[in-house]
Length: 402
Image (cartoon, rainbow, N blue to C red):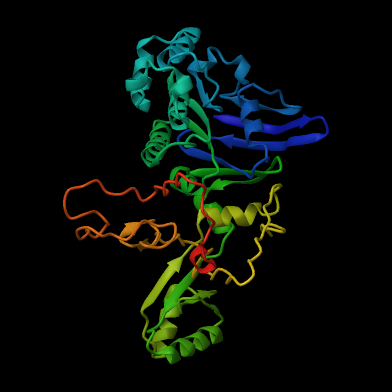
């Protein structure tokens, strides 16, 4: 178990952590959340004895880290995946750590298999990708088969398969009765991985509770109600009836109703009494991300602003039409459409136009501009070859330039 009591850390006139007290218990995954600059990394460094607290104390199993006998066999940690000698191979890096802690060499090969690096064990780590470096750091944390594990952003740089693997690894380690302390900014992963949450802001404790209790305490559930779209009068009738019963009703963009203040059985009874047919009646609860944003909105130090693009807008040439707005652009889920296929070739200029390929004079062409007979297809990115004489004056018309 990890226990912090009155933990405080000051750097000159800046207080990174102030009077922080919490417990990380074995048998569950504890998520460590907080905005950038809230003191999470500083706290984890103090747990591992890398930084000395200005006041207070933090212990692991009742002892400070520096007084633990053979600490690497009891505590494993990943704080910085880049803290590796780039000239060493993955196996030699782990082997040196094992020899310092009296861990048998066979354990090195075991953890390389656990993290999936056995095929690159003899490659130098400086050539590793970010995700491979994360796997190597996790292997180093597991090397001593410790009972206490600390991870700072363990899924950073991992692909979806790697993220799922880390999630299952954390859960399996906790199921074995180990203490697992994980810091992350990915709320979706914490919602799927963590059982308990410790949330800090500006170095102070904001919450210490289970994930379910955290969401319930920092969000309000609601009921989503939908009536037949072909009968809008029923929607208005039900909305009035729910409001008279003490519910708070809000209209959503898709025509549904968001109802708070009334339980689902009561909403169903009111709809039945009002002779209103329902297409949907479902409970909804805020996500961990929404609850986290609501709690920490007053503890965020770095906030982005809207880019005004002052002085960067290009002037429209005289006689030219301003660009037409693209429907849906800038909205969530919008993607740029594929480029138009003019003349049968993707990205190509219209045939016969200045700057584009000449019009075909030979045999018929296929749907993508390739000749019907076997022949090399023209390169759609090729530029016209310059003439041997002096270049002619540019005759491109404004309408062609557009």
